[in-house]
Image 1 (tube, rainbow, N blue to C red):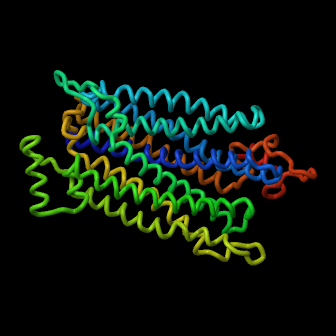
Image 2: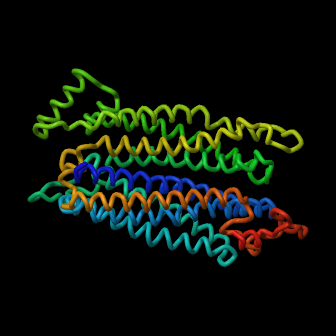
Image 3: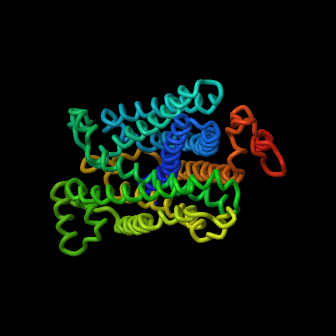
Length: 442
């Protein structure tokens, strides 16, 4: 493999793994913010207490994923600086400002709001605490918007002009309203809702199959299943619309994704050679397989994500739900497929742009820094090990915390669980342990 191949592989690994952190983060923060809003609007103290327990449980899972996702994001920044100096030299005037704004939003505002929220239980007013989590959610989506502004420009460069080999912004309005950005944002919004819903349903189903905390997890299984179903519909609908628009500004990518062959593909190749000179300007054929796999998974999600919701409908025998085994195991099967669909979607978008870094303007070969093959290989191995380790740690911590249950996590504290009317004590954990004891042991 040459330097360009190693650089491509490195970007694919770092971007894909980091995107998985981001997708779960975006979905969970929305769930937590909505749940806390419902809790604040609840008049019944006991129901409000229960909903705040849900805020702390799902919020703890969110905090774990966010913390490790931030580290993966730093790794992504390092690989940009090390290996893609050609991109910054030619397109820095266009992509530099959005990336700088994203850094300020993600690493300063979002992290600040999250820290204040995580340590603010019982220390700030309920309304201020709610405002903090919505601040986290809004800055998270603002961060995503600025990243997608850059990515949308790389897919469909508009609002700029070239001066002495360097891009200069001529119309910020065109860049910020780029269709390649907004269609992708809507598609991602559906995808992260799908993933968050599957995650809620999978964790809830795990406990319901064991008849644990039925009253706590029964509503979240229903909510997760419904959220996943709605997310699947939005993602599928926007994905189809987005695919149709590719024909206008990325005809070669559209041809490969649609599986065109023969004379149709030859016409696309001939048009690209007229525009850009001799060479093969079509992306690799295998990216079409990734797109088809994403489509098949999407169809499965549209029809099957609703099924787990039926497991909590009606009156259970003796209050138990464990006998509804298939419907409670289904979310655990669908969740990995959700992650796989995200990976296939990201590959379709990024690899489908090849051999361009910025479509029609800058090739990947021109964007790669002057790095030796040995240096590129070393950074590829290092970044892959770091991100792979982070992914393993993230999923290990999330799995352990999720299995412990609602009163034994990062945000569990005796002062955080208000007693309901009548002075009833807090629910005890395993073997009569108190939630605070479980918190310290964890």
